[in-house]
Amino acid sequence: QLQLQESGPGLVKPSETLSLTCTVSGGSISSSSYYWGWIRQPPGKGLEWIGSIYYGGITYYNPSLKSRVTLSVDTSKNQFSLKLDTVTAADTAVYYCARITVVEAFDIWGQGTMVTVSS
Amino acid sequence: EIVLTQSPGTLSLSPGERATLACRASQSVISNYLAWFQQKPGQAPRLLIYGASTRATGIPDRFSGSGSGTDFTLTINRLEPEDFAVYHCQQYGSTPYTFGQGTKLEIK
Image (cartoon, rainbow over all chains, first blue to last red; front, side):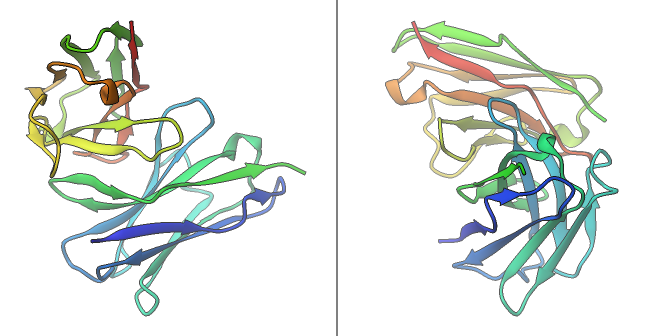
């Protein structure tokens, strides 16, 4: 069955760029039925949608992060990626990637990866 | 942006009882695209309900969702020990997609 796996550095320095990749296995990222998204959860807090991308490159971003976020997709590697610029301690969180359908919402999630912003 | 408010913040119940969790939206949720997720410590959220009332694949029928417009409810009948967790509602009808702050269901 379809699985998603986040990867990337667990520690990022303030003012630098956070970069994460989500690898999709057991299915194609190029399916026309799905979007792919990123969600984060600061320690002890709620969930925040960061943005979503379609395999063709169409993107949707949370306005609260839009100026600092870039999503991209690499269909040859069956991966999609997140870049978050100029990070601060407030960006410390568990970052999840997920599959999104129009009707069934965020139906499959990766296990999440903890990213700490600290010098 | 649609703000989702969940109540109560914490619900203390015993196994075998019924849990009723509420999610209120600041404006109508388009197409009733409201989802419920269960999250256990150290785990990713798990989709329970989508479209306000449709159970996701593999979800037991003791979980049910209802509501429309701005008021939604997740009901869990006959609580099992594994049901004690945090529950999140989410609207995905319009961007930015937003989540409620969560309801913690704890064992009494």
